[in-house]
Length: 242
Image (cartoon, rainbow, N blue to C red; front, side, top):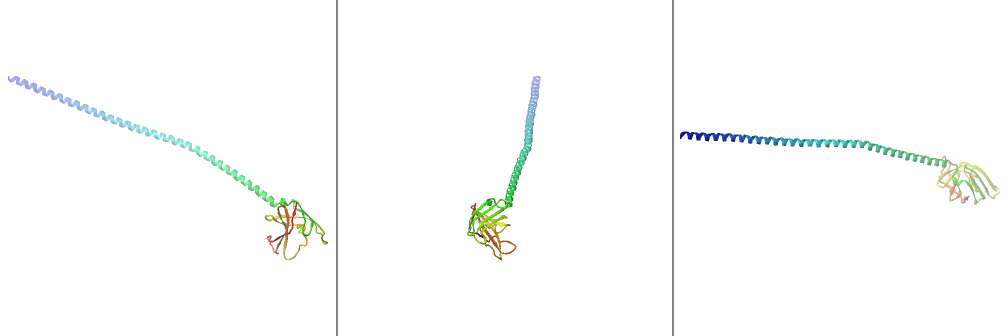
């Protein structure tokens, strides 16, 4: 009876020991599984982080390369734009030079025309033969050519000068508008159909007014002195026509 009790106790103890051993193995296996799972998760997380980092780096690299390409394209365009701008500027300069040259030529032409007109002995409208009568004479003929050669004829019907014919050369100088003075030449020839002029204590010059197809003789009078005052003049009361 005593041996059976001991055997039973031994079996119980053996069962307990086996169960404990099995429990310990189970715990270790579970720990290993948990640890393995944690390690795997950590690796996955790290792998995911690396992948994201790699993707970010790739995206950054791609953006940098795209930026460089764009910059390169802009730099390539810049010389073209600069070249186009330079060509446009050169064209404008050439056009400006052409316009300036044309204006210069126009000014030269205008100046030449003015010089030609001022150098002409008489105005073109004066050239020809002018005829008429005056209070002192009949059959007046006054002929002017382009070189300033003048021939004057008139019948005065007076004993001391029944007929006058004379020639001279003079230059017509414009005073203002249609008012001219004769420079040089014979005084009496340049005042056709007029006689009996004279006096002392003043200066006198012949001239004319040329307007509306008529020639009106004029006498300028100025005080004695180094300069001549052309503001004081007398227009005679008759005109000649062509």
